Image (cartoon, rainbow, N blue to C red; front, side, top):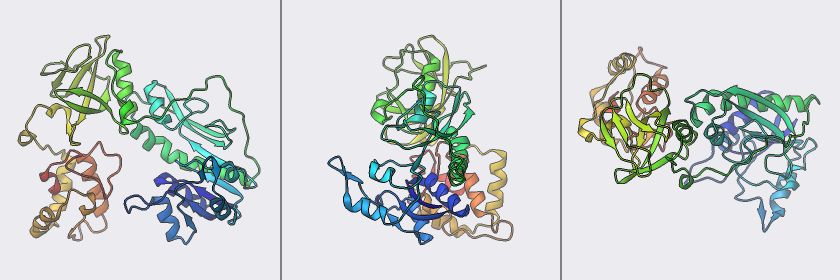
Length: 400
């Protein structure tokens, strides 16, 4: 089947790649324009394959479809539009053009949580079940007939990142491939969405993610994890804006002893303990936050909030010690000197000047990935632009 893929991100790239592996002809890829010189993964992969790539900044102007854009799309002769993740508004002239129409991936169990921040609101509302929907596009907002749905259990401490990585990303890719197969076989259903249970929530942004402390601990926990990692739930405390990550209600055996952490509007002050930052809801129940991002962007363990930077201890797990020794055995001393002198805080220098021997040959990416994931547990995906120091790493971490 001739397919036009309209979207972006790693998710879009994976869906695109899997559709090609299934034998479908991708006649064109429509993605977002490059940002600060960075090419979107979907467009980059398609360009490598020689597939036509279009990067329109907009499809509509003044409420009307841009004629030149529509003409370039129609020239491809697509039989189906696949929108794995798309942040642009696509005109109905394009949505309805293919013989089989258009299908869209949405990360919630529609009709619940329509809108652009569905994963966030699934967690904020404390839903016990989550999942995704693949639906037929229409002129409404996430209102089209359902083609396919898959659900999963939501764990008590799930965040946007963990839910996405564990289920919505891998199973969503499989779901999109399955949906296209059903269409090709003429077996794809069209199930109207029920109005009962339909909800719509607005997009979550940093300015709307401020924590309301006048609510029970469970609601505060759900708000924090529902904004973790993006956009980040924040509050004002100790004279600055701090963003909270890695929240849990599992405080069994935790004694709230430590230094007071005053929060304007909170039912009672938080407490910085050895285990993290203990917070209280208006029901006096506790929750524990393990990581804090300071106003300057640096991520630190919550237990270290009142410590000076020089007093922050670096602790290695047994697995990290083994990995460190394996790496150390194959590194030259001058690599360390060169790395420190050339490091610009960017992840692109990970493997800079890495010298390997037979013990680690072919295993460098796995070793480095393991090390950095342990150092930066809050980072969903380490990229070339990742600032290690602001993300919570220290200079000594470079040799871990």
